[in-house]
Image (tube, rainbow, N blue to C red; front, side, top):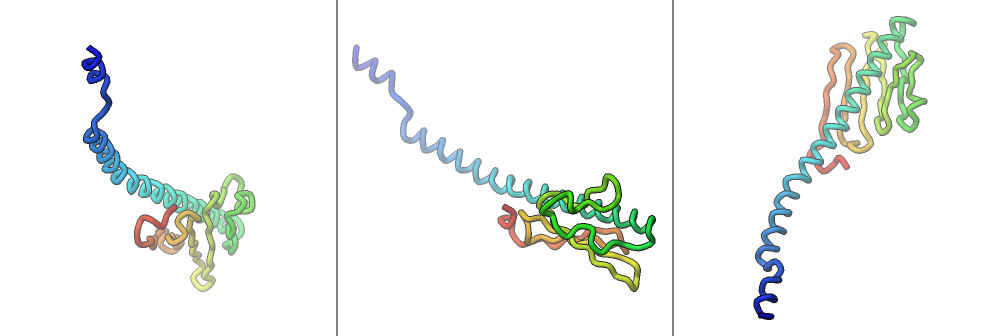
Length: 144
């Protein structure tokens, strides 16, 4: 009688535990790269949004003063310091660094931005075309 009871209370076998560990490993191998890709796309969207905000602010300043500003946002350390003198337009989010370069000959500007978590990637807005181009870093492991 005691022997039947001991046998009925047995735990998982070693094979069952190894199968569960293998399944968890496979799921982790799929999920971790996907998570890194989601983060990278989030950082990219944040930079692109900020570049568009800065471009909008530059065009608003141009409409009011007939000139572009050379320094809309060169520091992302404090969001308050990155606010242009246009009410309600915030130039850069935390972690985003943007630099404005004016081309006086053609009366255009270029904004280059990057994110602290993906510093190897760079995005550039050109006012002449209105397009944002990117130079992505090689590999997904560079965004942390």
